[in-house]
Length: 179
Image 1 (cartoon, helix red, strand yellow):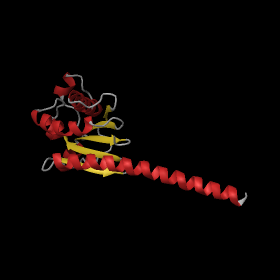
Image 2 (spheres, helix red, strand yellow):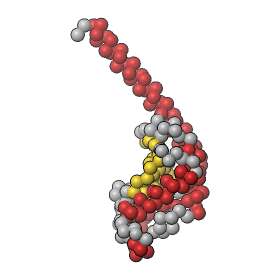
Image 3 (cartoon, rainbow, N blue to C red):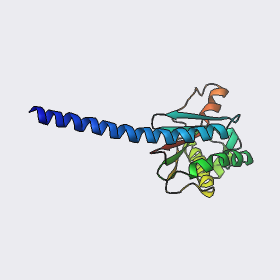
Image 4 (cartoon, helix red, strand yellow):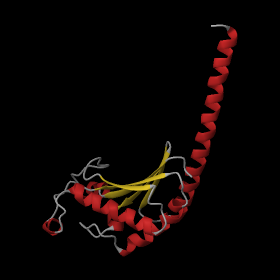
């Protein structure tokens, strides 16, 4: 390979790297702005907001959103989720994924009578209800989705009440360009 071809190849790789960095910086800045807005909105609430590489994750304990063992949003949920909606509704290209998680306790007879037979069913109902609420508050239905995860991916041991409480959660993850 001649010097000219090597030089051209090196310049092409450098230019591509610079373009990628610009997009990454823009993406980071927009997610960083959303992180700051959400941090201000949730001061003092039982909501954890983490900025990860290329995504923003909001974790909400289930007891804030649902009655114990239930899946219908309670009055506190309206307050908590309504704080999130203005930030999420501003996104036009960022995917919003709502994941519901449970502990490993078996489903009780009341929920079974309602057709909820597994923790996966329960977590799906919870995620669906959060998504429905956020859509009603202006989040684009084309960008938001719900996933029930059941008892998979625990963040703590299910051997203690505290660990079970940590595993019962809703995670709202923003993935994409941040705009």
